[in-house]
Image (cartoon, rainbow, N blue to C red):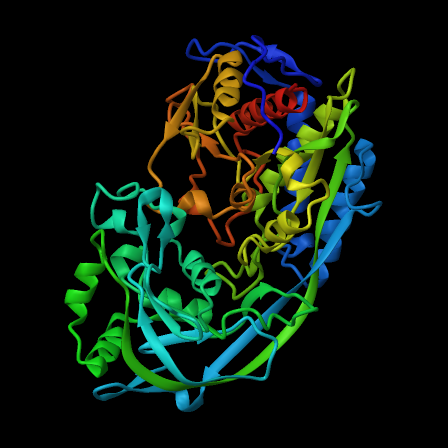
Length: 526
């Protein structure tokens, strides 16, 4: 990855059709513009309208959404980002898997039956009509973590080739504040990581051991989310044959049955696994895994436009916002069945389009290129950004940063901006300088106990070594008498996420201008 210059311009210039306006409560000037606000409202209102049907991928509303975005990028004067195309198509597989007789039979010192879905819920990403793992051996691998930077390796001296790994949810810091980052979950604690690591070690399957407190949600979430239509990126060349044979969640009572079949004390094993120096071990329990599988393969698209840098066109800053939402579902108490997604993520898309407009209005284009990326399928598992990062328009080693816009409005004007994951990030000084130019401050939030930092498109860039942070509206209103009327909990993933004319976008616009100035500085870096 190209080096990010540590020499910051002393004055971040916030450009575009902007005028300075004195804010209330002695807050110094921030950029705002009537034309900017009108554009933001138009984009949010349009993309969040019933006409777009909740923007679910692989429905008729995908065409409407992506074609609208292309029309706006063309109107702004950008070029297609993908070898002359605005679209980056990729395939997703949707899988439903059901164990034979709705149970797994296992045998060690004793026999046990793991009932589906009471004891476990399982699936696969393979394009096959069945999964069969004869006499599969179960191995307990603690947290299923290999993290040399924390001096932790649950896979040390254990062979899991062709076996089924049992891995505890979360990471050791949840139980001991002196380990990892304490209650601030690392990516090692996320359940997708457990599958990735088991696959890297050659396992045939992985079951994540559920715990309500450590997972932060109950068993019903695991069941409701994975009984059918489990999604994954699809590779037509391999038909996903290199994926784990089974992925799944294991209920604590199901795990207790496994340990009982092994003649082992589960509570003692879990306690030992939470401490440094734990050694993973085989349960010496085996059983045939047989699952009937049905699947559907469909195509969806990322959308992208590019502004070519005038001197370093082979280096790029990515500004992104996912275009998808949840589509149409059961009606709520008001009879509304459309998940419009005006805030999530109509506001984010509007932020990217406004940033693109500002770049195109510059008197001189930046040194580096800027890609304005709209990934698909964020809501389903960050699949669009995952695919982009594996097939980037400009190589990842030449990608300077990802500036992601996620549910950025409505937001009232605040004196500060919250940045998660900024500690030690090379982007931190850019955000600090841009905020200072607005007379605002950055609050670096170190609390990631809910794993929020890992749950949006930017994180796929982070996994590739590209700097990115999560930024959110601040905690200190410029006018304490005018708090946000629409807090996130009132609309998140609900039919009520609809645009309203009385939305306060003063903070949204200030934040977009702040991130635009970060992008401009990075694009002009040496």
